Length: 423
Image (cartoon, rainbow, N blue to C red; front, side, top):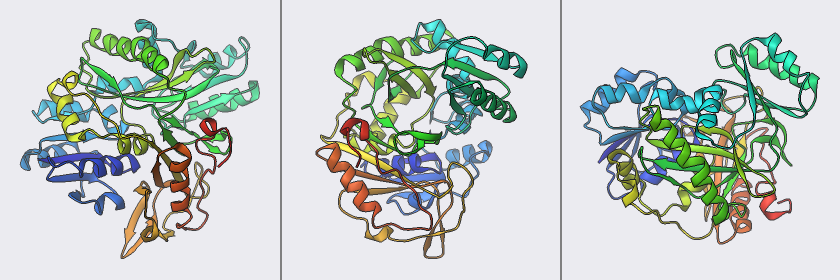
């Protein structure tokens, strides 16, 4: 079969890498793809703007593609699934209505309250003065969130009124994504990422991962799109995962169905597990996580092309998932200055030296002649695997030691909560 993957990040490179291993797959077209997808077996980058839905759909129709898989939330929020479905083209991902679970934090919060899903208490504001006035009540810290999409960086934990006012000013200044602001109570506990697959009726969690969202070691500094992750997570016991299934995933899917939303694809629950082992939703995403995908898919033994077909056909319940033993860890290598301003075009050295158990997934890269150069804030995701988390992290960091570009930055403490030591 011939497929189309939409996106250009590390998540998409990992997905294409996984699909290329399937004997069912002949060709994977990627729009627009990146340097990594360009060199993946069976893959071919397309010079088609993913925002050009008509042109993408024309290509899918002309090539008789089996299906399209959408990576980034932006295109889901803009209705690419609705457009493809209207033209009778198979595509995996939630509709524009379903994608509101990520594109509007206020909408998602209302859905969770309706479904009885545990989550932080929150207030929603469209008026800056009313938002500021609300700060006079309640306890600190508070969480300030831009309502719309902000690439994982529209969230600030404010520890006092001054920080909260700065965060509100920043969020409202975002315009479209910050025209509405959500102020939440601060949840105490440990974060857990649970990516679940659903065909609209059945919902199945994948192995849980733990992301490291902040730029600084020890989970300090501003939020990023994610600086590293690992799986499986010791915190995600069978008892906790059972609670996630019955109290979070299934009730959310049921609530979507009550709203007549045919939600197929990925429901990503960003959770906080409190000291008593009780889960609460921090936020939902409508797509695979990045960099969580870069550890979850390497551990997945089941053919992902078969899984994709089950999502379309509504037969997910008939396809048990199998997993490889061991652990995987992904360390993100970023451009200096990220998540603020950063340079592009710096040459990347040493990619040819990475071998062994580490796999390099390209995120923000480009090809200039025979050279790789930086093209984004998060440049590479280096995934190691091993019998233990320590083994997987060692493979990742040994591979990173072979890489170089000016001012490259990465956290050296990925997995520290599980290891209880700094790597």
